[in-house]
Length: 571
Image (cartoon, rainbow, N blue to C red; front, side):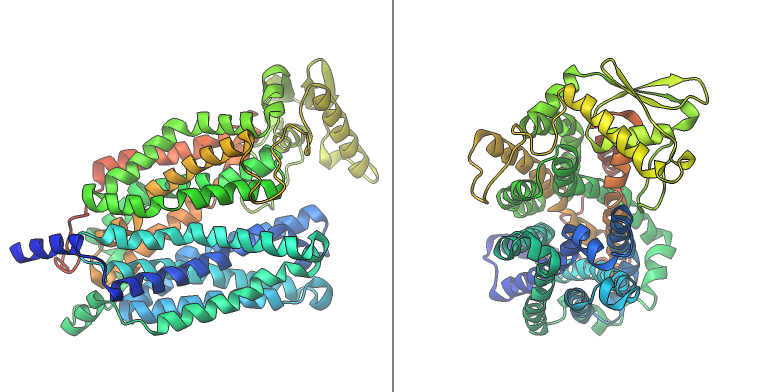
């Protein structure tokens, strides 16, 4: 034991070896490209909807495009089970070589796939299949890369080594944003919508070639080889990991005491911040993407910083501190973003009173994660319109049977029940309602998209005005919270499970947490905003989940940073 302690101290002091750098580079590069592939679809969902679901009205095609995007998230836990089992039976190297091939080829084929106008219904069906293959592959990729790097890392440096893998999701998002912006600028908006959107997908074949070549040079992880030589590998990793309480309890700890909170903080800092800028504050797409891209550039180094720190003080304190800061600061941070990005909207919310008058039984909770539900009652129509237009409002209950109305100042506009309209009314009545409410809001100071007070950038480096620079700083703070919870999470998960079931054991809670807890955030937040009329109310979703993780993590999750993962394999 004394020799082992000395070895750990020496590992922390010595420089990284050439082989260790190669392992990190190979694993991280491939995972960056996997995330690049995965994020391309989300960034281009609206254009893809127009290409592959063109036989449907615009609203319906957007629903189907989002459904196809959601499919990739929903199948991630199944990919974790399939490839986690293979990784524990066959080996880490060959399993995540397989995942990158599936992801890369699926993405490249999306770039070649003819649209609905050419091959009809076959196009959307093939698209959804490809999207599900991407989700399955990503479900196996992350666990393989993390386990491979962790099992090469010396004791005392696992947080530092695996933190490089943690940068890959952010770098993949950044790479996809940069490529899309570059191609858009080069070919123009019209050409990009017609055919230019395919270029980022087709470029992935070069990234795939580089990744496969790098990974072919790699050796199997020493921990897995040692286990195979000793014959201690699991014959049934899934049932051993989740069917035996001694291991299943660690999966539950990982999910609720670490990953769930990490997931919502991660999605809030990167994805919800972008959604909030574009869909709630009406910042144009180019400006919002550039602001997020700059925050990612400035904040990404935090993954490595907090990975190193976790080797010194532990994974758990840093992850839970990130959750605590998110809980304490999300409301003031997002209000500051509103004041800075769209001051006219913030002022209108303070000065113009908007009320929905409706019968209580006429209002639904508009939770719609798949985009397939229809909300047709007059109350739902009024609330959804106001929520989409970033209007804060109160609700005043009326007697049963009352048709809902929107009151802006002293102006009252009756809403409508969509199911009671027929013929030309289905278009004329909603259009008249939208115009009347829109005019009343404009008179009350609510700005429309393109208002001169809304932040707007003309280029990637046009960010040094007070308005844009202030936004980048606060968005970088959100990214730093992401790095706190995400930088140490890989090492924490690896250390919870023995080698024989490590790939399977850590992959499932990770992908349930990130694919479901995190992936449901936009739909849940919108439903909460529509329900209450408070544009910040959706932040309660990440705050409540992060609070749960903070409590469960403090009580149940062990601090494992001093664990020797090559020993104690029979617990």
